[in-house]
Length: 296
Image (cartoon, rainbow, N blue to C red; front, side, top):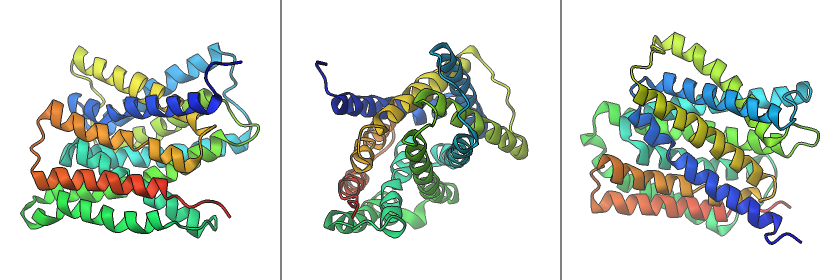
């Protein structure tokens, strides 16, 4: 008998994956390329390495048109997520942008209520006003004093939550689909689809794909291999065994750590009110995830 149960291993995979991707915003700040270019390299490097590893493990990269369709849809939402989030990171910093992106919990819960006919809990009802209060403490009290770029970054962070929630739903659907690809191959395909879409955005925005130094290549490699490939494969494995509500809860480790890294690595100036707002927002997201409706 295995020493550790499958649910315990799946939970560990989610925790490890969330920790790895918490460093994603740090990599975006450290690398000296444009936001769309760093997103493209993340998906290209991670996707190619995952595809190679999947083939070495004997996993197929093709499981029919339905799997490709799901991967393409997830790749579209992931590309949108990164395009919005990377711009938000550069405008408001890794911590706040990641907290805003993780408001996806409320959108996923809303989809469960409106589309799947699930019942909302009292925790969800309490979490929404708490999240709004936390957001106000973070930015609302000084909204007029904030520059136009900072306000734009807040808006982009909230739009990121919309794209992120759509990606999470598509990813969970694709990894739990019978007859679909293995998790590693699935994330590889999603990543490569996203890379193609992000490349078109790089060209449209006029950004350069030039990488100036070996340090930048190193950060991009860490971003693509550890934060993306390693993180999302672990999360995909966890999603196969952990309920969606609990998975969303575990993934809250990402915004919490991202805010900590922002303060520790980049010296983010944080007042007592802003720190309280961050704690309140993360606590609200926690309640929202814990209060994800149960299926009828």
